[in-house]
Image (cartoon, rainbow, N blue to C red; front, side, top):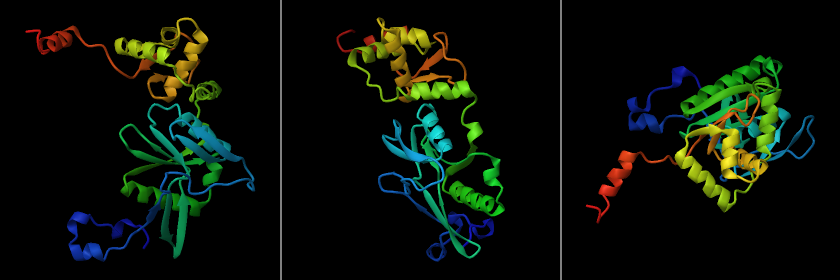
Length: 264
């Protein structure tokens, strides 16, 4: 049954018999482990491969350089908690035939909201009218499943060449291990400071090595503990926002002491 608005009724307005006789407008399919539903090993006219993603905690299959660029940027995007590729398929009837569509990228935000992304090289990839109709059906189906749908062109992934270089630089440190001592120094600094600069935070984490400190800050961006604008030049004076513990106010500290047994 084709997904049209005329056939949709609020489920609260239906009785049990009507619900039992209802027909599904589409089927959504996922792998049990959240991995890709399709992969390729050569045999394509464009690039494809595997990307080790920090936020996915696994290898992500990519098809085309634009998709690789998008998931690389997503690993550093503070508004992305989880990212997956080729992990959601939508099947529905259209014009008498069953249509199959696999999402390029799916992200999950801090609020748990999912977003499906279709990545295209440019506007020419959307010239086919039948294909645009297919995407319109997919968007409506996902909307009713509370999943956002967005088309992203390759030119929209990075704001500039500088932005792309920054993402590639920071992404290279996403798996950097953070030792116990610098980790504790960061937590102490985070408890006392909500904002700082790239250079000051790096120095607080690694007082004896600014290079090591910067590398750790870059890793913390992927871990969503530090937020920094990568669209422009990144210097020691570039502002950063620290996500974590905050120092207690004096009033809160006094209240805590008064509530402690033995301090009355």
